[in-house]
Length: 443
Ligand code: FDA
Image 1 (cartoon, rainbow, N blue to C red):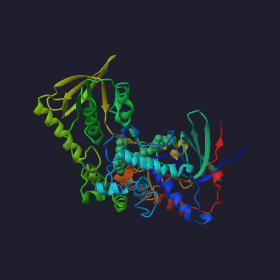
Image 2 (cartoon, protein in one colour):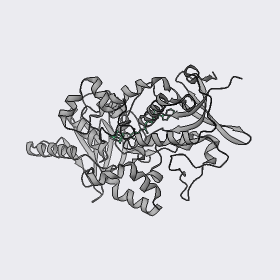
Image 3 (tube, rainbow, N blue to C red):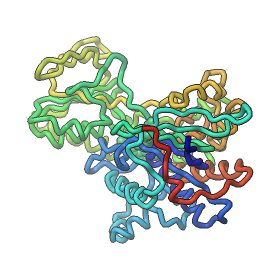
Image 4 (tube, protein in one colour):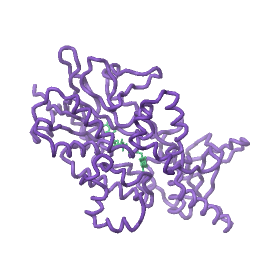
């Protein structure tokens, strides 16, 4: 049987987190002695690079400074920076004149695509990772065999010393809600709205950034439709992006959070959750209020906010979805027949051990049954598990609020790469590039 090639690093998922890692590896290798070269490959289930494509709304902006791009905080002189991308597009001076730290989301997506293209040789798209199996030597797990499946059903296996799992968040729906032609999560928003023909009423659930964005977008795009925003809060709450609060996303905050006792960790999350969770940019809140007020003056309310309310029943008919909304204050019910309902009800961390099969049982957990994770983002495992399993995302309980965000990505990948290098012994024989991207095909 032919043996699969062995990589130093195999990344599962190729969103911004592992893209940033691919860049860090590329920059490291460009300056490294042959014996220090790190061989890496990344597997992504999407057919091409894509970052939340369903929410690339025309005028949505980033919630993070462009200086927190894929590289700058780790390597300010990197050629993979957002500024270098802008320069290449001939927009640098226009961007400067704009005097804005927060690029359009579509523009940042183009930046990601541009960067992904530059490290294309390190990625296999259309590869859904379906299993990870341990490879043992003298009773110790030294490597991992990673199986991925293409959309054509072909299975490939790659072997690695270290895994970096960066599979992102999962869309979250309230219990009992099932997606259908008329019931959506906002993750798929732009793909779904193409099916709407002259809608008369649309319902949006949720008062976070996505809920507010979707509400504003539907109201603007479908001028003949009533848009009903349903949420439990009294009103949209602003995101705290003030300078001192923003420090919670600093690289140093990861050290502080990691070292803090559990009770202090919880307190930090409570104090600062309004920097990220269930909050909306101030400008968007002002814009929505302006629209509601304008319609009030005109005497024709097309944008309706059903606050202090929740959806208690959904029933689909052939041509509508009947949404029953209940007031949390009085219990009064309002029935809305709508063309579609969009749940902007957030995302949750996925349990990365789902992919790990029998290895999952060898990962140590804390007293609350959460994965134990080292400061270097490596899962704490049984001693006999020598290969490293690193997480990008899914570490909010250990590393704090920036874990699933872009803020600290460039620094985090530098720390992961450093850890991989520090643990490397003896130095492996360098793998030729042509060999490095080949795989062991099973069928
Ligand atoms: P991400 O989810 O981006 O990528 C994971 C990748 O793994 C996906 O491409 C997926 O297909 C792939 N994958 C999953 N399972 C796989 C498998 N088994 N095999 C192969 N591939 C697999 N944060 C921020 O800091 N500033 C911001 O402005 C925003 N804006 C924003 C807008 C919207 C609409 C959302 C939903 C989220 C944000 N975020 C954000 C937060 C967001 O989590 C963050 O921007 C990144 O997406 C995190 O990057 P990752 O690469 O970790 O996950």
